[in-house]
Image (cartoon, rainbow, N blue to C red):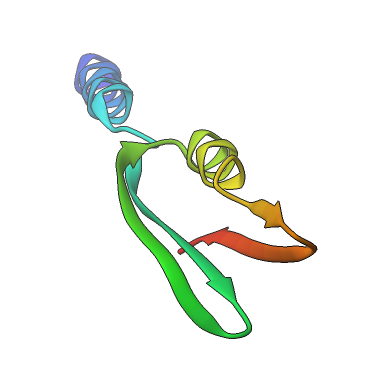
Length: 70
């Protein structure tokens, strides 16, 4: 019985190790509530998606686009 428990625990750990924390993310930038930029970022971690999306935020002639991960 102990061997079955150990094998079951090992199998569970093996399955969990193959799962990924990466998801498909989307970056959307708006100006005055109007979407001005829209891009699929692909499969990545949330922190990487946020960093990449934040690089799209820009300010031109005092006007700022706000970008957020969706």
